[in-house]
Length: 192
Ligand SMILES: [Zn+2]
Image 1 (cartoon, helix red, strand yellow):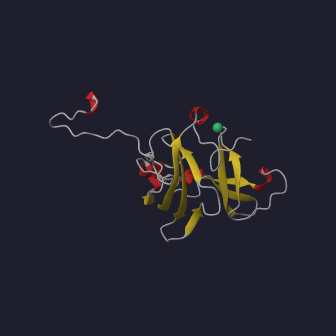
Image 2 (spheres, helix red, strand yellow; image 1 turned 135 degrees about the horizontal axis):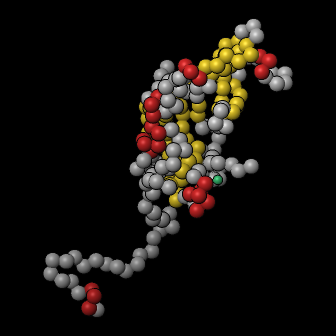
């Protein structure tokens, strides 16, 4: 018996000989969701009345870079430490979602301020630029004789959200993804 296989008192002899693994039994330690992992997940989002607001069904799973604020805080917190195959239900208050509604973000705008032939319609959403040059989605919430009221709150602000999530994939981010701060590929950020 070679020296290194000699059992010493109190020690178990461990068999280091390689074994043939059956082809379907590949070994991998599931990656946990931690900072700088790319996570792909399917979801259904419902409001407190159980109405479906949004779901990924029929689309590529949603993909994001974990730990970079690419998704709402409540969801990112709930996903931390989970692995592919996990399913979870997360209830998220506005503070951890899209924030509380801010009535200062309601603005009355004269109709003539709009260029082109815009059909003013309740619920119509379109992007505008705010003073800081940031793009915001606004919604027409009121139509009057010569003006409309635009709401720049996020459409989901002030709403308790429930996410049913199933995690599809967890992988390490590529160097490009880390540099850009978002995920690339299916379900991620598409560069023009
Ligand atoms: Zn990018």
